[in-house]
Amino acid sequence: MAAAPYAGRKGPGSGPGHQSARFCPDWYGLADGCDGHPYGVQRVARDSFGEIGVTGPAWHRGGGTPDDRASESYGAPALKWSPSKISRYERARTGLRPRDVERLLDYYQIAEPRRTLLLTLAEDAAQKGWWEEYTDSLSEDYRQFIGLEYEATSIATWHVDVVPGLLQTEAYARHIISSYSGVEPVTPGMISRMVKVRMQRQQVLDRDGLQLTVVLDESVLRRRIGADSLMYDQLHRLAREAGRPNMALRILPLDAQHTIFGESFVIFGFGYGFADDSDAMLQDVVSTEQLRSGFTLEGERETYLHRIAFQMLTEASLDPPASAELLRKTAESQWSGGQPGGA
Image 1 (cartoon, rainbow, N blue to C red):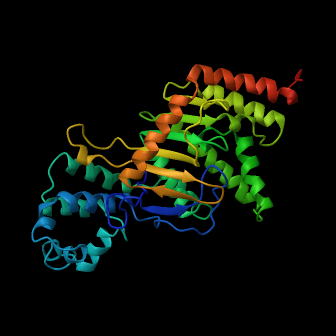
Image 2 (image 1 turned 60 degrees about the vertical axis):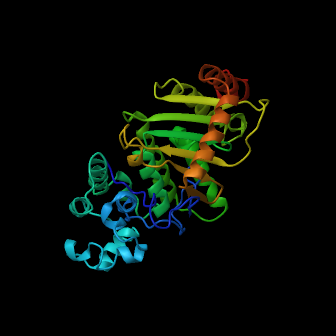
Image 3 (image 1 turned 135 degrees about the horizontal axis):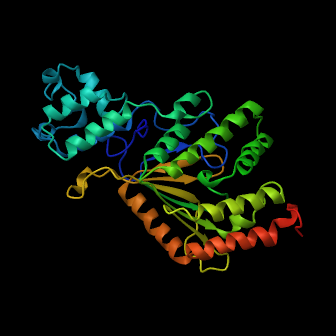
């Protein structure tokens, strides 16, 4: 398992509708400054304190505010930690090491199955992902996005503008990333690194246990990105990927009855937890995308609404076999001009 980079679930500052700005990863994904959770604040910090804070008997004794919980009346002397250290952990200002999580679980009397869940998260968080090698090129928020992508057991994607990054050909990705130089200068070296990162992200497609569901607006198939040959190859790549056993790829036709209008979004689902303990499950995370920025949505209501919207989009779309056929037909009818013998 790799690093658990997501820092904001079920904890202080992450209530219903909580948002954090970041760059949209399937457009440019460049490493300019942006707002959001500080990377290095491991997700396990808030997960641990969020889960323990809600259910742990120690914090319920005597009630109190979050600041009270970090005072010397709540655990600091017994753990031999300063109140400021507990406060930093509670607010996810610093990551929790596995041995610290174990001490917290002992003190707060956390039983199975939540204990195993949180210890597993702590061990995962101590690992570094491959994307750590690109700290000079990737924004903190883009690295968080990659970490979510790497951890998720299910990914549901709706795209209305471009092919999702996980399914882009190298040429398609390079053209999109290079085109940003028309807005502000991007060095050739940076472009190459960003393309390499996008291609490396696609390794998750082969990961055991991942289920990927993609709905694309038909306009994505017809919107020119580069030369005819580039589009031809990209659409045939999509048609091939549609045959993966862990993927359901659907196209929403232009003449379909549209009931959902809005930006592209990705829903990350996580399989941590136990069937007989729903409280131990981790919440979904939604990432919405725009041209130059995006938001992560963590609130239960927001993620639920996006689930409903995605279901409606799925129901209005072609089934996977018909979608694959439309991909091939569009490639041949609209983009085959650059192929030998093409029109």
